[in-house]
Length: 120
Image (cartoon, rainbow, N blue to C red; front, side, top):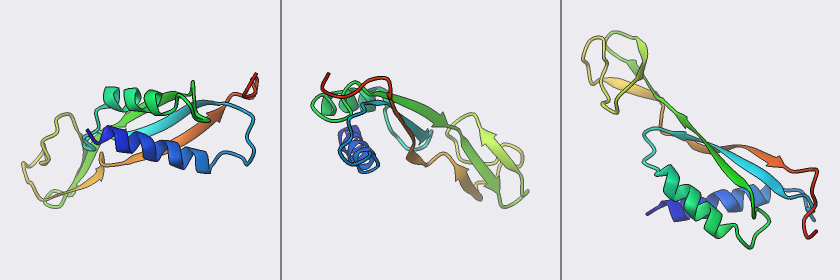
């Protein structure tokens, strides 16, 4: 269950980008996760909620956007988005491909709730 360590890292990175002496709660953390990243989104959201209960990110929503797998074939030179997690070119059947998207996992956006202040 590596989702616990991923959630911890997301929290640490998010806190680094909050303003010093922040009094505005974080409304949401938006993630982009590649379909091949082997992250269980439900487990990640559970761990995130658990770890943020007593932090500056409490009540923040974790919003996840799944990035589809996109490859470029070295044989026929086509770029295609894969429906399945089978890494081969659907046009020519070659396994000589480069993965363009689908492995990423990053914080895309932190949204602050500027209508509320912490500790009210």
